[in-house]
Length: 97
Image (tube, rainbow, N blue to C red; front, side, top):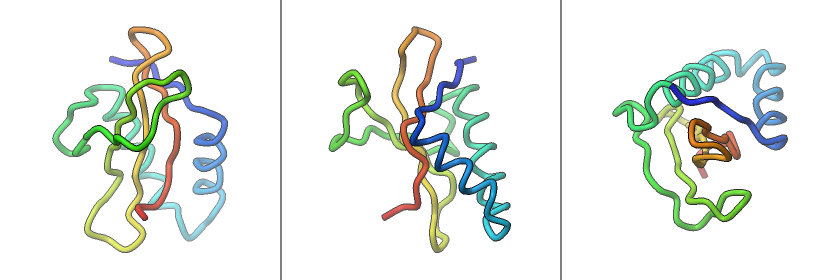
C-alpha cells in the first residue's frame, strides 16, 4: 500500500469538486480512484499510463490514471512516485481535455 501525498494544486482541485453540489458523484469517483491508486497503481480499472509531456515536481515521470471514461467531462488524475519509496504524489485532478 502506498502513502498518498497531494500537491496544493491537486488539493484545491479536490476541494472545488467537494464543494460543488453538482459534482458530488465526480468527487466520490475521485476518492475511489485515489484509494485504488494507493492499493495498486497498476489496477486495470485505472488505465494507468505514462504522460510524457509532463514532469513531476522534481523531474519524476508522470502518470495518468482515469477517474472515469466515455462520459462527458471525464476526469483524470496525474501523479508520480515519490518523494519516498512508499509514496505517490497526486499532482493534478482535472477534466480530460
